[in-house]
Image 1 (cartoon, helix red, strand yellow):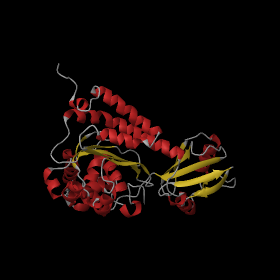
Image 2: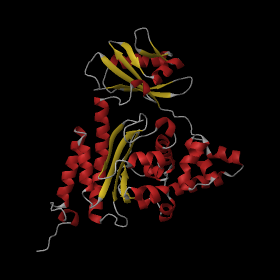
Image 3: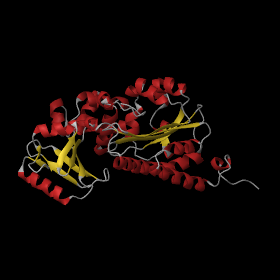
Length: 386
């Protein structure tokens, strides 16, 4: 009798593909509670395709903390080699980050054959490490950059339809498990780097109602004068309205509470969060403050973001106007053009980028900015070093 099982299952003597999916989904979520299990997940996914390698990572773009980093069945020298010599001019990064999170697909969907022929990454790096016919998914969320990729060790093989469908089923589960892994790790260990070196977020630690530790970002925030430490030792604000709201926040005491605070003078918006589950002692609490209003992008940042898409200078100006919320009518007056022309330039730019809305343009820029643009300040090292 003919064996009706799908090829991916038959070749390894396994059960039906649905059984394989159930087993892998169980293994993925088990790794959330036992982080050492991610290596086994990588091996299991690589085993779906003969001769495949799997690359998975999850890293915070704010702190540089690495939650997941593995290169199953591949050369461990790949990640540092890529970061040192190729990452800065890898045109694929912004395109991957612009793709919907959890959507599995081949690299050829966003990289043309002509670009492959002209790319240092494809012509030098990938063949050197036996990486061909890449498929994968963007697994980024919030301030974290995530990726799952699978590739053949030899060129021209591609991925058969059966394992491709299975991987497409699994990637949304990987995205959810990545979110859970990040949350679990942050609750158990609030920072992999020293507290004082945490960028972006201001961190205050209080014991018995008195501040006992803070990082440099918190020091700068206090030096600016709007946030202050009150007479009772609690965090407060210079204006009465927000000081009263902060006092109510302290009195409430709920874990994982959050409060939006707007500086009436500068207009800056901050979010205050109380972290929960980090330390068991009830006498200790951790407060973080994050600035929600990012600085407007300069022309160099926008040019770096737009370069992979081949936008003209005029289209780049239109994109920057959208990113800084400048009315297109104002840009038209500055450039001496009609409003219709400027609108057409922005529309053309969005079509080239494959982003149908300004909201998606902004989201793609912020993710690209976090990974590519400030390389000197963040230096994302997927091996866990900074």
